[in-house]
Length: 75
Image (cartoon, rainbow, N blue to C red):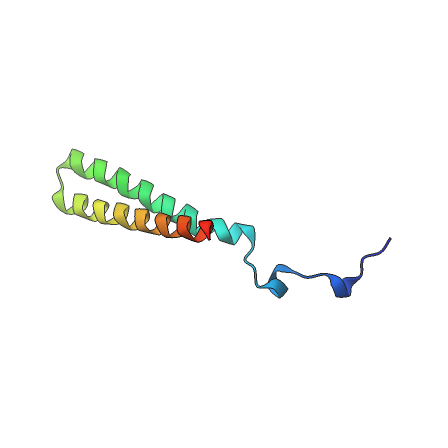
């Protein structure tokens, strides 16, 4: 049995992303969320209001990115 190379369609031919590419942005969003939470706790411990604001901003960004990825996955 041989494979007919003319009938093989790749992800590039089908313009589909590789599975690793599909989850990469979701992982980055989750890491941003985790980092924001960690920074916020450190800022609270140091009583650093500016760092706390920055951490909340990062956390909200991560939440938005993660929600965007979830919506993309459900389509």
